[in-house]
Amino acid sequence: MKKIIAFDMDATTAETFPVIFDSFRKTVHDYTGKWISNQVILAQFGANEIGMLKELIPNYSDEVLETFHKNYRSAHMLLRKPFDGINDLLHMLHEHDVITPMITGKGEQSLQTSLDALGLADQFEPVMSGSPDGSIKSKQFGDVLKKYDLPKDQMAYIGDATSDVEACKDAGITCYTAAWSINAKPAEMEKLNPNEVFTSVEQLRNRLLEN
Image (cartoon, rainbow, N blue to C red):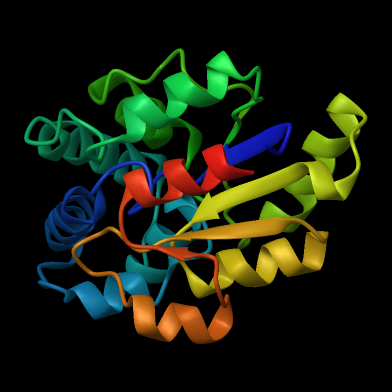
């Protein structure tokens, strides 16, 4: 088993996309009067919330970010649990002394909101959030390896997106594709990340136990 197995948050640790869509849609409407689609929101992914809101709201300010976080906390009241099997997976990894970072494109404050709401605030170390300028995951993977003085073949990342596979390739680490979200497209991801796509948390857990 790898000595470091890092986790993404959205659509990997929990089904947070409904929370994200609701929060952005309400915030953009608050400041522009327009209702935007999920696709418009998804098109901004990569950057954290600051970078996304700057693209979606012309007169961005700190007040906009405060409103977003208020909307995010409110929307998260309906999501209080991670995906089935995540707690068992984390317990199993910790029993095997595996280091479990959280590395995500989310902003620091919304990430902490999600961790608290899901009861996972003490399950990940280190916790690394995103940048307003776009994805920095590949660099963060390298930073984690340097922190623990481990080679690349001792780290893997669990993420759901095409960009996660690409960031892992850039960093030279293994990517386990999480395809257990309601919006997952496992057949498409299999083409990008052959033999490393999992349609349930239990399936990934069993794979790890075999290694």
